[in-house]
Image 1 (tube, rainbow, N blue to C red):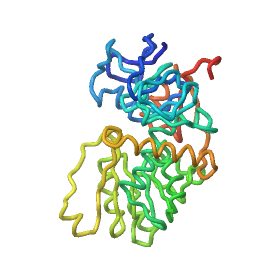
Image 2: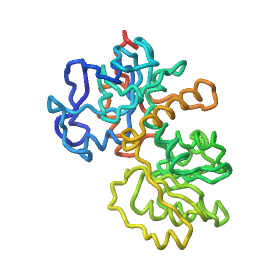
Image 3: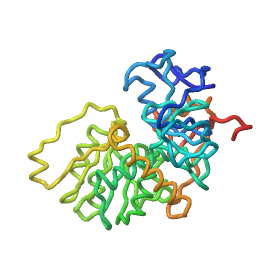
Image 4: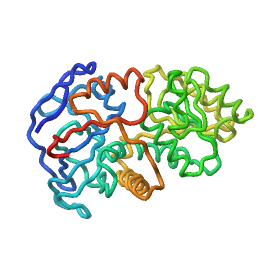
Length: 332
């Protein structure tokens, strides 16, 4: 099978197209013929070596955390799925930038009437968005939410999900001025520059601050987020896009100012509560099919364009979701 992989860590230029055997399906797993693979910043981190050096059986690692496609084979012990069914899947061990991928059945859900390109952008992004809002963030109706990296995949998904969870006002921050005009199309009440957001949030809330802040950026953004919190406000940490040297929060200050810091990590959830990811994926697919949740179509690029897409992600030049078309014209 054809796959896009790397055998050394580095920039987008390390990608190579390779040929690998089709993987074998194991107990509790399904083999999926991949149609589309979602692109996420974690795959940039994987390629750069932030999760370690490539350790595949042939010396290569294949990125890709989320896919859609057709079930080609089913392992022992799997129920509720059938060969030939079109599904979406989360792949905590990567492997999506390939013509076939093996997935734990717990992390696989039928896509129903949702288009394959749309479904491929859900399995990592939407469980994360649900998790940071509902589980880690404890969002309540009427609360004000501030979402950093607002134009990215998780950010734009979280804005829409926050609306379905009956948030009051939904604000976001972006890293470049040209993205400020995207507020309405991404589902925000307002977007602010990430360089100077704390004062703007306080002004927009008459000095009260945000009840919930979603932060995948880190560094000084994380510190300033605490300053922009309302009483009993929460900052949920779920990434480190800025690659900043982190700071240490003072528990005494949190106690004295009625503030909370929480964390969300989908990799840990996949190890310890994979059914939660599967349930949130099913919720997202169901809401899209019923019309309760709407999304813009993702940008679709060929698998060979992965290097360019990664470069855009690293340069913060993207908005919304990008997926890679893996299937050939005859398969899609």
